[in-house]
Image 1 (cartoon, rainbow, N blue to C red):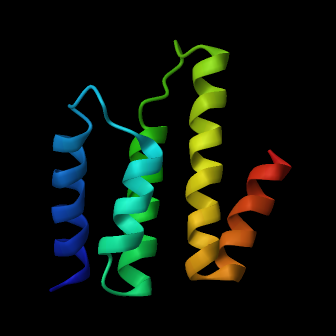
Image 2: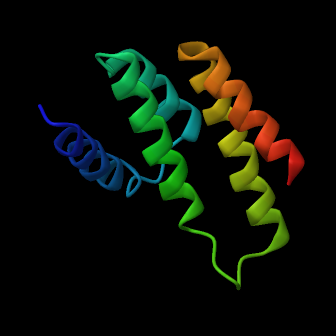
Image 3: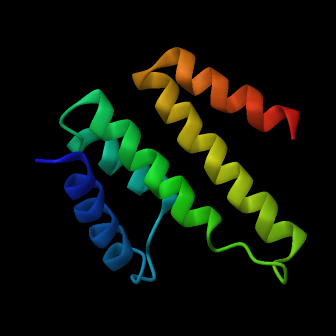
Amino acid sequence: MEQTEHITRYYERLHAERQHEDFSVQEEINWIMLNGETQSEIIDWLLCFDATLNMDIDKKSTKSFKEEVRRYSRAIYRAIKKVDQKLGEDFLKAQDKE
């Protein structure tokens, strides 16, 4: 399967899952870690998830909502670190500089 195709399929699945009231960021991270077939696929899905969460932020977003999304991003970067330690550390360090 082409890289774009597997990201598109994941994004469509994510969109459907986020419609449920009981959607959990940590459960989504766990699902990705269990269902990704390759390191590359897991990392792509985690980054797609992170980007999707960050797209929810707009100029009217509250400070607490922005902080919540930042915490979610850290959890995603820690999951990336389990797959690719250096890449995960780089994301975490970059976030710390913000």
